[in-house]
Length: 257
Image 1 (cartoon, rainbow, N blue to C red):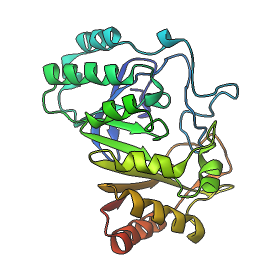
Image 2: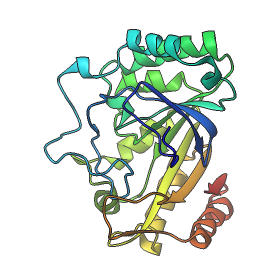
Image 3: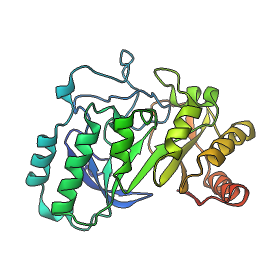
């Protein structure tokens, strides 16, 4: 990890880092280490813009971390870096479920966790767009927790905030999230040139939460420089207000970070 607290994703394992939501986490990056690979292009992404020519997919499967590489990374890790970790976090430089052998990768990670860090929760951060794939759902269902990004309940709001490479069927994705054992919904609220916390946007987001009925809702805003200088953070007071409304109006566990 660099001195300024930013983690490096050019390796399979990175950190440990301090997470606002999950404590001390060890990052696990299944993605190509050469560049960001994602089917979203979020206006707030700390990794910067997604390359314009990218569709969110690559036919070169060898670019992704293979199960053997994951085992080698754990074998080479300093044992002290594996102690005192609150969670193993599957994330990295892009959308992790784009991995073409995601289920096998999860199995290999769980085996390493059981051997080296028994009892340590394994969590995945995902934008949820690949949950409609059975193989992805099977892999995610084996984890201790899945945090699904849901920055909007209406497609037009999602399009402005996340700029997906192809249209997202929010109803289909919502059904897939709902099918997970203990889904957590994460939402990044932003302000400025693009905003997703006005009453109209919140109304659609509330409806999506009612449909999914997640175990918990985690809301936050920009904490590192976004790729667009026209994007600003939402105030802590506003985040707390939204979290309170989720608890009171929807009877869901919610916390602002």
